[in-house]
Amino acid sequence: MTQIFEFAIIVIIISASGVMAPGPLFAANVSYGLREGTKSGVKMAIGHTIVEFPLIILLGIGVFSLEAFPEFRTIISIVGAITLFIFAYFQIKKTLQKNQDVSSIPKHSPLVTGIALSALNPFFIIWWLTIGFKLISDAMLIWAFSGILIVFFLHIWMDFVWLGGISFLVSKSSRIISNRNYKVIMVGLSLLLVYFGITFLLDISL
Image (tube, rainbow, N blue to C red; front, top):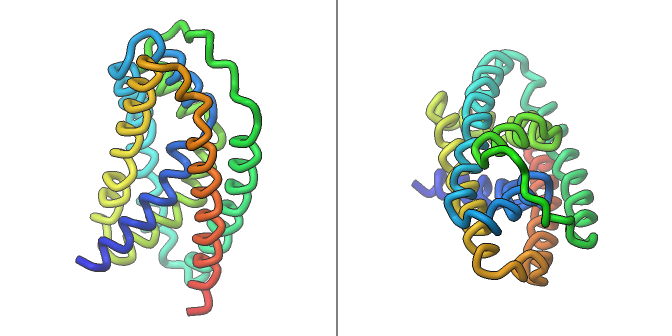
């Protein structure tokens, strides 16, 4: 129980930095939220899940295939750490920039937009191919194939809470977009990414 609790904390903190990151999905979610409220965020999260779930399954199969190579865990730890450092840098840089223009509402439904902005987002794909791949690998080392679902459920609920929550808040007050506390949280999460990147590298020597 302690092991899964500790792993859950790591997955949730690292995932939060990606889920809450400013980007196309966040901007579109704000636009829809201004018009449709909470339900638009939930629909967008469903669209995101449609892309994310099969991707996680495929990565899990990839982990199973690559575990036969002794260098696999060392390589994925190094790549994951480097990616965490890069994401932290760009996330802090983007968070501190002026807010994006979110006044224009996309033409497609929130569900379709959630699918498109996930499948066509290179940062989303890179995140899962590097950082996410490392988390899946660690989970499968402990819980075998069940680890894939453990990572998925520990991650996916945050998408629904965040996207649904933001769409609800902006439907009540558009000022939430420029909330100073959001920037503080994002910078804090980015610094935690650096910390976990260091722990990834330290795990290699253990």
